[in-house]
Amino acid sequence: MFIDEARIEIQSGGGGNGCVSFRREKFVPRGGPDGGDGGDGGSVVFIVDTNLTTLVDFKYRQHFRAGKGQNGQGGQKHGANGEDVVVPVPLGTIIRDEDSGLVLADMSVAEDKLVAAQGGRGGRGNVHFKSATNQAPRRSDPGGEGEARILLLELKLLADVGLVGYPNAGKSTLLSRVSAAHPKIAGYPFTTLQPNLGIVSYGKMKSFVMADIPGIIEGAHEGKGLGIQFLKHIERTKVLLFLVESTSEDPVGDYRKLMSELAQFSAKLIEKPRLVALTKTDVFQAGEKPVAPVFDDGVDVMTISSVNGDGIDGLVYRLASTVESLSSIRE
Image (cartoon, rainbow, N blue to C red; front, side, top):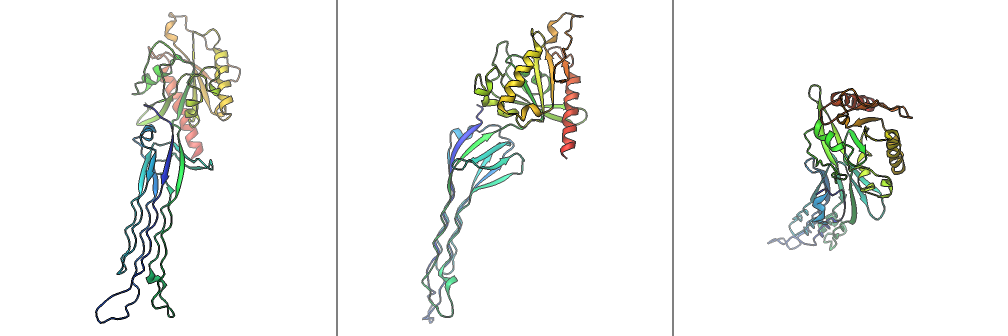
């Protein structure tokens, strides 16, 4: 099950109270203060787990509460700290505060870590309040309160190349051809109901990540079909590969409609480098291969068949070259 949004409640632990206590020893009638400090409350900490690919775990658990700090004791004994709660999330998770709407973290690096709710500090015991004028203080600090907040989690997949096309345009077939991914493939629309990632290998020990999302239909930016539910997953990709059926009566028109849907969802999407692949060329007889039309925005066009492999190697290396050039620019 693929889940890419979740709403959870978190609560850090309160700190333990400081202790008011006095030393009681034989032959020491006026023992000084010896109240220990309270322990710090536990925090709620988010970390990246690269083995996770979905937020499905949060469907079954929406509440996370860290441990409370223990109270201080006599003999300057400090209370134990509350236990932290560590919450693993997939790479690419955005964590947002529901009340303010602020993004607290974009967990897009494997080493990312977020303390989303800090535990309360432990209170000081009366040993800290002894002075020349107050040898027997009866004062201590209460423990600090923990934090409670509601968080919204949103997963946006991280990939180098995003596949864009109408339902049944051959996106899943291409992904299965160039990678070890095994998306569902059938001869009817919307067989892909969730994003799929595949690692495409090329050259010597080189690879890039390709993402296949459910097919786009007109009105997708308004939520039609699977709409905006999955369009967001290509926002982070470096390159867009538009797949248009070579058997279409108007491949240029199909491309324009896809571009329009992306533009209405996010203007940033149409600013990304892109390439068009005319798919399913294997349906043509030998010598009848389609001539790639000229697209009005000058985008490069390649013809491929994921069934018999025509044009696949050239497409992979073209995509790899584009990804590498973009990576070198950012470095």
